[in-house]
Image 1 (cartoon, rainbow, N blue to C red):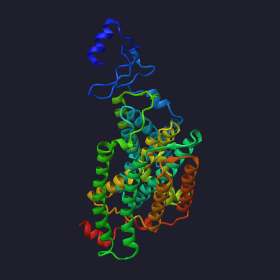
Image 2: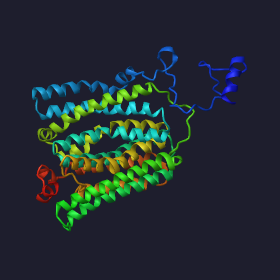
Image 3: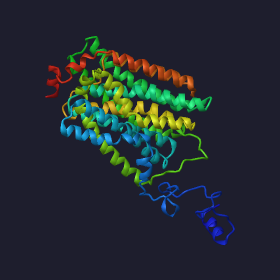
Length: 429
């Protein structure tokens, strides 16, 4: 029924309307403006204001928020010079609820979009913590920590986040299905990213560089530009030219937003600032904390930091998988790993170049091998477009084995991370 005719029918009483005065059975289209804000319980006037912050849900909606006072303790500890161990511990504990709340607010923002854009938003803001930590580490010259934390984030998303989502979703649903074509596109991009990351490590290990370390650095920067271009092309593919491959069937029981559209933007800005402050504390204390707790720095950088930073992905992917919204769950976990490989890692290399830091894509043989095997394992598991709890357990166990290997791994590159190679210095001049 045309909108004008529908309006006349409503005025004459020929059409039954709901509480909002609209014919929910016939009004099936919207004007070309932004999506309307859905109603929410407890909002004044029965509707949700676009500026509604939904502060009760954000501040009181997670049990992890009991850890938020640790942020204040971390600030006091740094000011009072409590030592690197306590500062790192409190900052890490406070980062977990902030990362989880960032995921919650992103989910609220995603409710105003379609499932494809929602998954992209979850992946993007879920990786905000890793990117912020990396930027502060680049600033402090901890380039190896940057590499390890980003490697750990890829491993965490592919094995732990995806595995946990498959496992929890499989316990509730015997078999879950998702778009095989969309998964293949993500897997091909992951393989491209791993291929690009492997070449500098192989070049270094075979000692076939034309100009020693400077060749690895030049290759890394060129490859980073190529990966950024490829990621931009993937966004066009995913959002415009082939968006139907990532669409999920509409759910009649859609969740209603608790926060207004502009309210989500405000919360994203506030939480991002807080994460930035805590990231500064983490980077400041990470080396001293490793010595204080007698825990290998590679284990802290590759395992502990990503687990905390990926709290948003953990929560989002598990929730969506248990609701049988596998397109979004896959978009959060695999999409996040793809985004780190094709966007965050090369972006850090380019930003490091801009500030004079010789960050490259040579992740060393051990770390590169772990990433390659993880990607191949995930590709094999998800290529059929189906998931169950056994597949999830397989990925989770693989992550535990990788975690143990990093605990016993000695990373010699960390010992010289502050010293640039002479050829690298010459290249930077």
